[in-house]
Image (tube, rainbow, N blue to C red; front, side, top):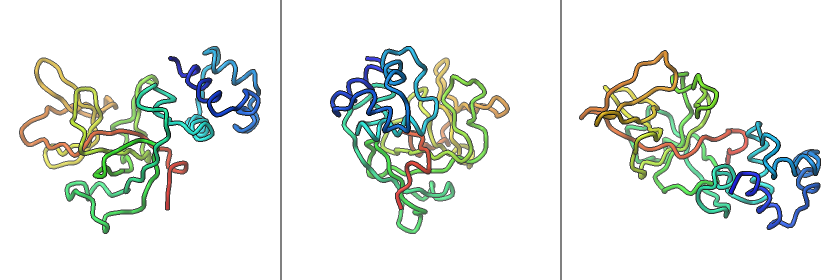
Length: 206
C-alpha cells in the first residue's frame, strides 16, 4: 500500500471527504488531496503538514509515511535529557529538561536528545539527515543492527552515528563526509537506537 493509499484509507475511516481534509489542512483543495492519494502529486514536503495530516486522521505518522506498525495512534511521552547525562542512564528526575510527546510506541527507558553539530547532516538530499537542533528519540532496549542509527560511546566520546557492517567488521559512520568513520571495538558502548526524529514545536509537552 502506498502513502497515498494509506491517506485515502485513513480519510475514509475518519469519514472525511477530500474537500474536508483539504480545508482542515488550511485550504488545500479536494483535487490536491486526490492527487496525493493517487500518487500523482509529491506528498507533504513540509514535515509539519505531514504530521498535521496524521493528527487530523488520528493515525500513527510512522504507519502513514512508511506503512510500519499499526495505524492506531499511540501517545507516549519521553524525557529530554542532555548528552552529558547519557552515561548516567537510566534517566533520573533531576536529568529531565522537559517531556516530549510522540505517537511512537517506545520502551519506558527511552529518552530524547537534541542533535548537536553537523556530523550527521547528510550531503545527499535523499538520505535520512539529522540537522543540528533536531530532537531524536532513543530506545536503549532496541538491539543495534546494521544500518540503524545509534547513540554510542567511542574512545570516551558520545556520538550519534549510523552503524554499518562490511567484511565482518562494524563501523560508526557519520553522514557528513568531513567526519571520520570509526571502527567498533571492545570499548565501544551502545546507549540505544534512534527510533524517531521529532519536530520540536509540534511534539513538545510541558
